[in-house]
Image (cartoon, rainbow, N blue to C red):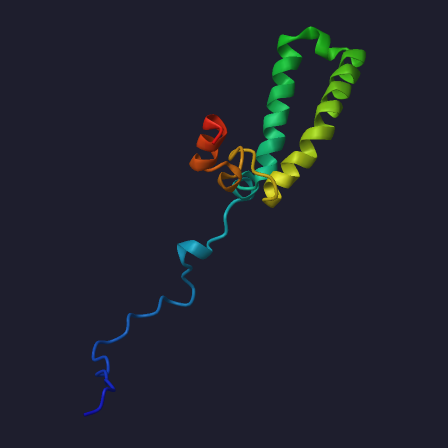
Length: 118
């Protein structure tokens, strides 16, 4: 007896191919506005513009040039620290969400030894 299995040939007709001029919905050309809004950097830019316009309207001192220099100076001191940390988090080298690694925590027996002193 042989363990090889044979399959019977398909008897049904294959599904008809779409006409050459008709496009599938997955390959349709999207409008430029939708393609731009799908990119994350455009959303970041629009958010920054919205925040700037909000403060421009609600806080008149923001319109002054010396105030803008002060805002940019303060933002730069914060950005010097946050940009490298963000890049490390994106690269997966730093996970601040976890706190500490589970492997680095002391075992229960080690804690009991430290408390009892035995």
